[in-house]
Length: 352
Ligand SMILES: Cc1cc2nc3c(=O)[nH]c(=O)nc-3n(C[C@H](O)[C@H](O)[C@H](O)COP(=O)(O)O)c2cc1C
Image (tube, rainbow, N blue to C red; front, top):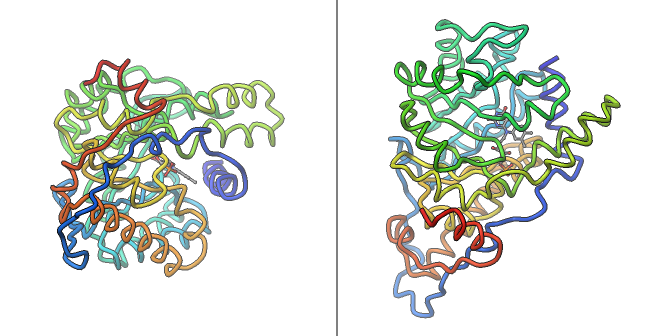
């Protein structure tokens, strides 16, 4: 069941239109410096993220695991993360925890030396659902050991759960369960496309997570993904709900500002290129996460993923050059103008 769901997600994201209809990153514009006064060859993109040293502030976000072909995707992504010395998160490990035979589709990651490895479980798995018990201590340890994870991401994906035909919709007690877990392990909370508000960020901070991946609106829409799955299953109601909530959520750039409560913030959701990565850092993120934009290359060979990411890193450097920032801390202070819908959002969210 889970196995086929994870495969459906990849297939749908590869073949259908699943993007939110507005990319908010375009609303953030850098002030160009006609006299950068730096040598391009001396630009330094190194950054520290969640206590780990990365060559660039980029994380390959959770995509997959748990079905046969996912092993190739994870291997291609892991090799790229290792060669480029950036972060890497596997997809939900639920399938690998339920069926040891599938654990190797994630544990291929252990064949590579990656500076930051992020595990992944779902918040719904932390609490009792109608048919399942919460993950116990052994399973949590297993999730870490399966990939030698430095950190475990707990994804908050309630939009997806409520839209998908077989979703877990009991969210009662989630924060308390997260708190229990985060007191014992390094945990980050991660949305998957609907963003994190200031209130949620404060709650997460009180629950002792060490970081927040805002997973905001503007890139892959899981509500959109579920439209195609519901259609296939001839579930008219879920298809309708999926369409209605296609563009639901807090735009990623807005969420980066909202979630800045003194924890490590990862900006995922609609990141397409190195300018978007730079935009995320200016708004206060420590790094930017990419999923959808890497998916096609991830199904091919590691070289394709590397080519794609080298392009992103080069664009980041070009942006740094044109704003006269030789390193990441100088980039963080670059000047931007915020326009369009993102500006409206920021003004009305109270300018946190
Ligand atoms: C095919 C696919 C599968 C995903 N599976 C997971 C998952 O298992 N766990 C998770 O936390 N996020 C998952 N995500 C969400 C991404 O990590 C990310 O938050 C989201 O896609 C927004 O980033 P993007 O706009 O760059 O795609 C998945 C994304 C894609 C495209």
